[in-house]
Length: 538
Image (cartoon, rainbow, N blue to C red; front, side, top):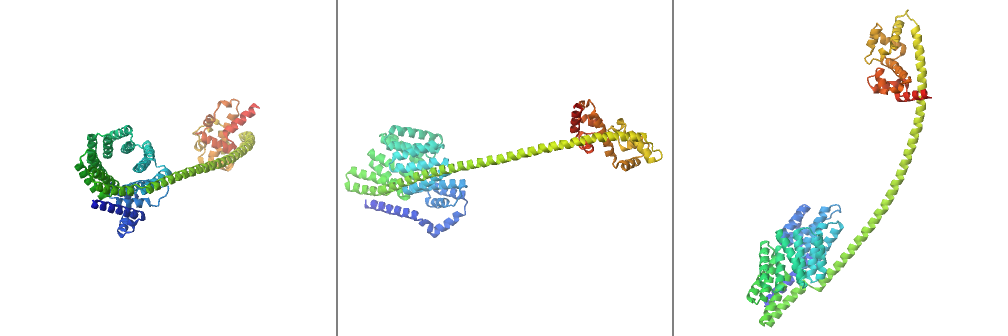
C-alpha cells in the first residue's frame, strides 16, 4: 500500500518538475536540444510542421514540442498566410500536448492564441478544432454549461466528417455527465453513424462514451461490449490514453458487477500504461476505484490511503487556481476580441473618410478634364472656321486660275511658233492636252504623249520641264484636276461621287485623286464640291 502511495507521490513530483521545465524552456538550454534545434532549423516551414505532426502522432511529445515551438516563434509577415496557418496548427497541437500533461492552463493559453490568429486572418477552417479543444478543457473541470456552447459553435462551422463525429461524441459525453441521457443517446448515435460510414479512426472514443452510457443505465452487457470494441480499436490505432481509459472503465464496470478480481486486474493494466505515459487523471480514477474496492472489503485503512492518493492526484490535475487562471484567460480573450472589433470599426471609418476624399479628388480632376476638353473643342471649332475661310479663299483663287488657264490655252491655240522646233512641239503638246479623251485615259503616259506629238519621250519631258517647271506627272495631274473641277462645276454634278469623278479623269485610285486634287487646288475634293454646290445654289 505504501508502495502505491510512494509511486503516486513520485509521479506528482515528476509532473511538477516537467511543468516547470516546459515553462522555463529548460529543454532548449541543453546542448542536446541545441543540436536538435539546429538540425530542425534547416528544414523548411512545411517540412518542420510535417516532422512535428509525425512525432505527435507517435506520442513522441518532447520532439514534437521542439518542432512546434520553432514554428510558433518564427517571425512572419502578415502577408504570409500559409505560415500563419502553420502557426495556428502548431499552437493547437502544442495545446493538446499540454492537455495530455494535465497542464490545462498552458493548453488553454495556446488555444486562445490560436483562436486570436484565426480571427485576425479569418482562418475559419481551423476554428472548429480550437473550439472543440476549449470545450473539452471546460468539460474536464465539469463546467458543462461553459463547454457546450464551444462545442455547438464548433459543430456549426465544421464540415469534416471525422471532426463532426468527434464533436458529437463530446456533446454526448457532456449530456451524459449532466444526466441528460436521452440527449446523450441522440448525439452518440449520430456520432457512431457518421464514424462507421467514413471508417474514422475516432471510432474508439465514441464506443468508449457509449460504454459509459450503458454503464450509467445499468446495461452492463452492452457497456462491456462497447468498452471491448473501443479497447480493440485503441490498440489497433496505438491510442494509448484511450487504451488506459478503457481498461479503467472496464475495472469500474467489473467492480459494479461484483467481479473484484477482474476489476483489480484491469486497474493494474491501466496503471501500467498511465504511469508510463503520466496520465494523471486516469491514475486518479483508478485509485478512487481501488479505494471503493477496499472499502467494500471493509479494509478502511487501505481505502483511506488509496483515497488520499486519489485526492492528491485530483488536486494536482484539477485545482481551483488552475481553473481561475483559465477564467482569467477567457476574460482576456473577450477583451482582446472586443479591441479587435473596435480596431476594425476605426479602420472601416478611416477607409470611408479616405474614400470620400478620393471621390472628391476624382470629381475635381474630372471637372478640370471636362473644362479642358470643352476648351479644346472650342479651339478646334474656331480653327475649323478659320480653315474653312482659308479653303474658300483657295477655292476662289482656283476659279481664277481655271479662267486664266482657259485664256492661256486659247492664246496657245492661236499662236504659231513654227520658227522653232521646241515651240512647235509645245503647241502639239498643248493641243493634245486639251483632248480629255486622251488625258483622262488611265493608261495615258509620257510615251503615249510623245507618240501622238510625233516626237520622243526625252524632248517632250524637256519641253514640259523648261516651260512649266514641272515633271510629266504633275503636268498631267494639273489637266486632270482641271477636268474634275469642271465636272464639279456642272449643274448635274450631284450625280457624281468623288470616286466616280476620280476614275473618270484618269486616276486609278480615290486616294491618289484626293492627294493630287489637294496638291493642285489646296483643298479637298469634298470641300471643293460642297463649296461649288453652295455657290450654284446661292
